[in-house]
Length: 299
Image (cartoon, rainbow, N blue to C red; front, side):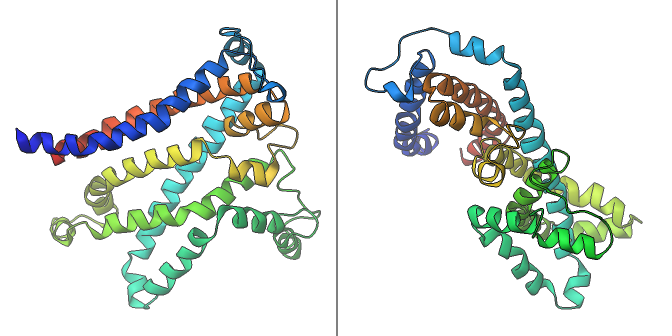
């Protein structure tokens, strides 16, 4: 019993500081969301208005467009794309072909370049590449005869979300790939040998041997990507400023716009609380499928 209680007792101070540093700001933000606090009237404070900010938020059509952008484009599409591409790249890096031509080390070093690039630098470089007048990508497409006129990738509503997702994926895909690569290299080779002796081809071995062994890693990486992507502000704001207009506005940029451009801190706090509630759902899923299992293994 003493050994079972040792780990929780050692973790108790950490949980205390986490609750203190995260709990108090959350409660303070919740109180602000119940007021009409303005950035121009911080000293006077805001008058208590109850749930009026939440009613206004949930009854606004713009909110559901922002929610769609956040859940579908920013989170679901970009996370799914990185999971699929990361798995495919990991399989390629782990293939016998690269080892045969001694390209394994070189390919992994090349893969690290996007990961080592700060997000701000990545966005600036991609804005230059995707520029509608001087962009290298437009010039290459025109040179190949694929387009007649340049495309404003970050201003055209038909191309802006694919362009944003490309920037996000390029900068963060290496982490996903290297995580899956580590998982692939932990699969016991005896399992593949046994499956091959039983007549299983490469596709069958992947779906019945590799993928089941890799599923815990896929689940963890998917949940972590959801955490990191759902509340991301940098890529959207630096690339498009939530434009054109507010076409690419997401929850994180909506908080900034309402609080520091429209000066409506109370309303901005309400958006933040809705966002925090949605993140809490992801947190519960992470605790249920990852943290709780690991905690039980420790005990």
